[in-house]
Length: 205
Image 1 (cartoon, helix red, strand yellow):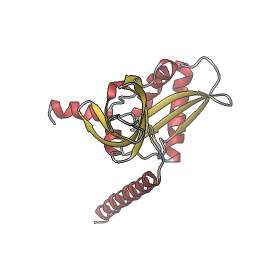
Image 2 (cartoon, rainbow, N blue to C red):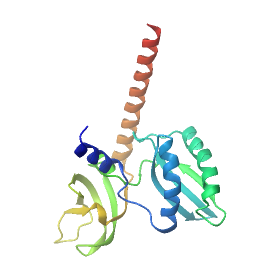
Image 3 (cartoon, rainbow, N blue to C red):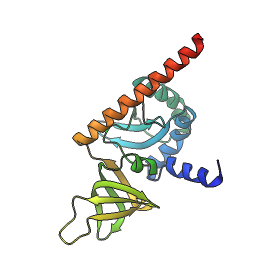
Image 4 (cartoon, rainbow, N blue to C red):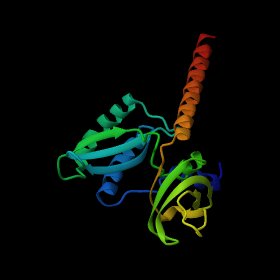
């Protein structure tokens, strides 16, 4: 693998949309633990709702995450959080997968879910607005191309949104998205079953 390909792989897997303030401190603490376990951080967020909650979203590189894996990550994080103490008050730790209407934080997320509807909020005004909604078309260079469904009369339907301008982005739950997520999950489970069967056959021979 050459240096250019290494850079491309890192660009696709590193988080382009990241936290700020206290959330960023939490992410800094939990990300290395999660990555050492073979997972990757999607989002870290402190939520003040019925008590303070540290919400950590994580997944495997293939986008999967089981309940048992959430429990394993939670157990691994607890002692590290006790030592690092990024939040100086009591909180509940909540581990979860990103879900179907997931946050989009990596270049690969925007590429994987091209064709589906997303909502994007930017950190500053782009063409007079900060909120965009529409179908993800493609990733072009350092921007994501969106075909907007909330364009006002006279506005361009397509918008090129630079990654470094994105404050938050997530998929919008639709019937098409649910169907596609179920299809991909089924295909992944089938592929895993086939690999396990191949391994069993090799061991039997």
